[in-house]
Length: 272
Image 1 (cartoon, rainbow, N blue to C red):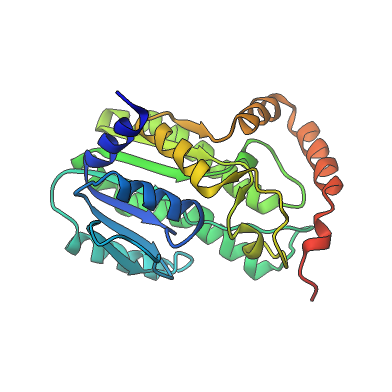
Image 2 (image 1 turned 135 degrees about the vertical axis):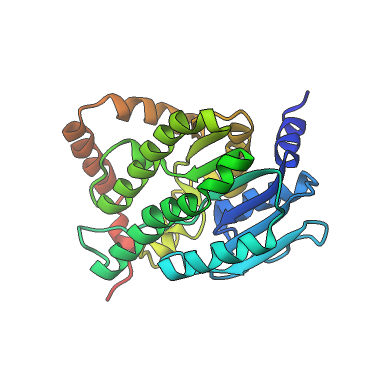
């Protein structure tokens, strides 16, 4: 059986697919892979803007939702319950997230708190509100974490910590939820060519994208189909994950600070 057929069969095994942040980047690439599978599932995107170019063959619905707002999440879950099929396996992809660069609390306390809401609270709340449906139907929760989640990362302190939470939470939830027929997968990309730079406060692309969004998504969905609890995309990133996870955390932070400073990312930061 080919890898593509395995992934296609995986997506076809669900009656409902819910993905957050599929309007761009990795989320949009995963949505494209879902559409290529010719699944009959009802597919829902949760984000502030609708993705462009979704084929008419996909049973697709965009639900406008600001994931930094708890009221929006509660409202969109209520809408999902009205629209999604009542039976069949469910796939939930918690993809939405954004970062920040600079000495804490740059680029600002409000930005940092909103990042916590979107990167941490939203996946937990969305998963929690849909948990009874997931237990009754079976399925998978895929959480897009980051290579940064394997170590403390100076100059991206809060962002890396949110991804560390998401990584550990996802792996623990997988162990806990298997008996209910639910698998959880933490997807951990390294640098990817997406809109991350803009959201993190850079005036232009840093040129550090190690993978394209499509390359990352291809590895991610293969890992999802195999139900691997942790999927690090890119072979170089896999080596870095193994190395950084074994270092004492103070050493990892010190080495990380030195490496990031050598990249001279300050030259890309928007000037106030």
